[in-house]
Structure formats: C-alpha cells, structure tokens
Amino acid sequence: ASGAQRQQQEVPLEYKPLHSDIELEHDDTEIRRWESRFGYLRRFKATHGHADVPIREGSLNGPMKQSLGYWAATQRSLYDKRMLSKQRFERLNKLGFPWEETSNTSSG
Image 1 (spheres, rainbow, N blue to C red):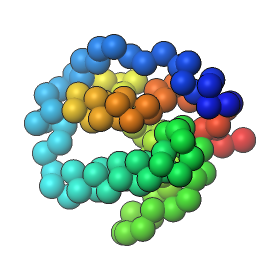
Image 2 (image 1 turned 30 degrees about the vertical axis):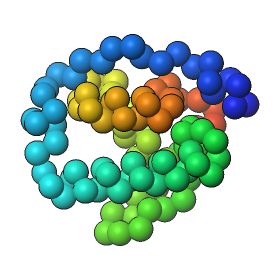
Image 3 (image 1 turned 135 degrees about the vertical axis):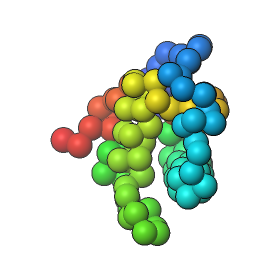
Image 4 (image 1 turned 90 degrees about the vertical axis):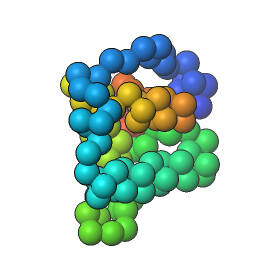
C-alpha cells in the first residue's frame, strides 16, 4: 500500500475501553515495556514515514525479544476487544497507527 493509501484509512473518532485506564495499566513493568515498544514504533515511523508495521518487523531488545510487528498486532487485538486503555489508544491514534490490518502487516 502506498503512503497515500495509508493516510486515507479512517481514524476512529471515539473509543471506550471496557475498563478504566487504572485497571488496564496497573503493573509498572508492563507500563515500562509498553513505553519501550511505543518508542520503537515512533522510531519506525520516523524511518519509514508511517506506523503500519509489518508483522515480521525486527526484534525488540530486552527479555521479551518480541517483534515490533507482533506488538502492533497485539495493540489491534486489544483495541478490538476494548481492552486497550484510552490513553494508549489516543497516543497510538495520534501517531497514525492503523487499526485495521493492511496488506503491509500480513505475515504472508
């Protein structure tokens, strides 16, 4: 997909998680891990001009060694289940994160 096609993707205007942000983000380790991956996503966007991370995009450093693409897919899944905090939704949305999987994010 071209950059123009990525920018045409509809951005959700409102998101209501099932739980409060406090309930969803209660673990300091999890918060630090999420912030680290969000930083990788920001760097990916700065490098590639978009936040549409391919599912197999590189490994992250640290104990989890989870791919950035897998993390992005997890954020979409949490969003679909309304388990992503509103604050995280807003931060990802502001970055231009695509909530629908595109051909660029598929593993095949």
